[in-house]
Image (cartoon, rainbow, N blue to C red; front, side, top):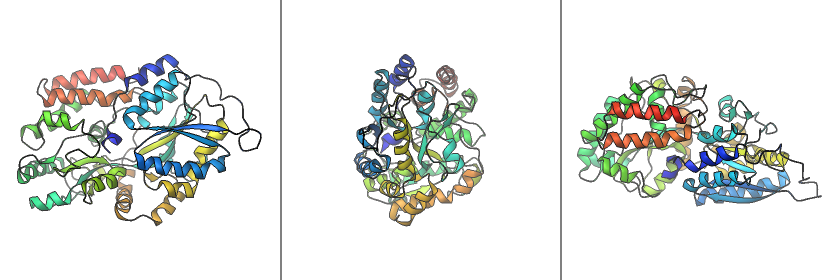
Amino acid sequence: MRRIYSMPLAAACTAALAVTACGGGGDGGGDAGGGNGEEEVNLRMAWWGAEYRNEVTQEMIEICEPEAGVSVSDEYTDWEGYWDQLATQTAGGDTPDIIQMDDTYLREYADRGILLELDQVDLSAMDEDSIANGQTEQGQMGVTTGINAMSFLANPDLFEESGIEIPDDTTWTWDEYRDLVIELTGALGEGRYGDGGPVQPADFQIWLRQNGKHLTTDDGEIGFEAADLEEYFEFQLGLIQDGGFPSAALMQEESNAAPGESMFETGDQALARWWSNTMPGVSDQAGTDMVMLRFPSQSGSTEEHGLWYKSTMLWSASASTEHPEQAQAFIDCLVNNVEAGAAQGMDRGLPSNQDVREAVLEDLEGNDLAVAEFMESIESEVEAQEPEPVPAMGASALQDILNRYSEEVYFERMTPAEAAEAAVSEAEDAVGA
């Protein structure tokens, strides 16, 4: 589960893409006549995920193969190996026909001509933001599978044990959050914590959004200054020094925790930041139904919490596929076929297709329903805030940069000001390069 939001740099990706430029190029080649009985069309489809995602995706493939007139060969792995594998395939001119894409990497591939423009996929049942999340200057380069949002999860068992009430997430501020985390850590006792610290880059991204800024801009540049990052670093460091967060050494250890073995999942941490679509799995792992909360804000206003609807994932296609029409037909089925959507459920977020969403919502229960209700509850608040720009070229480097300089601050090897200046300089070199 941690891998879903833990986004390593995958340096091999950038290097391989720079060498290949357009992943084999070509205009998509000729039509092999899939579905007309003359020749079977086989498409290769790549995605990342755990075993449950593999199971539901296989169901979707079985539904969509006859509709698109193709057969599909699956290529799946976990998140940590996915981008290196995709970069290696692209470097060798062997890019899969259909690619599960993350918005952080969309421009990395689209701007180098590796992705096919999806101009034959029906997007009429999707809202404007879901459509725009897959667009670059080259066109519609990805189609949103579903939407999610970053949230705080609260372990109700630990709150009850501590005798502290779960906060009102419609009014709480960062100052109140700080006091709460310190109080929780003191009440829970040795080896247990109110919170384990931020996750990057989403946490800093929300911090910026609350201050009217973005991680990257529509112009493909860094959207923040050193002063913004310095303030953010100072806040996190204060929580370590005042005992709200674990030690820097333990936080570093936690960043490498295996799925299911983080302090939050083992019941040693009361609050944690997770993407909304991961809540059911985290709850199952921890053995308790987690409570979803909005992020705190500076003012305590629900319209200033900085949350946004992120494309959980996108479907893209290779520009070098020999079967562009069939690839688009298959993606069309994945996002528009109600039966396929029902098989997928909430695994790739709240479905972006409104008709599919309605069908899925009818059958939801338990934690899946709780996620859907949370997403619905913040809808008007999200709409009141600016949408998040599609991440700029090179944005995939930002998590690594933020994590490295965060550690320099947490271990007090650099001051927040020193780390912020160095991080911004490195980020400016990476983004848009």
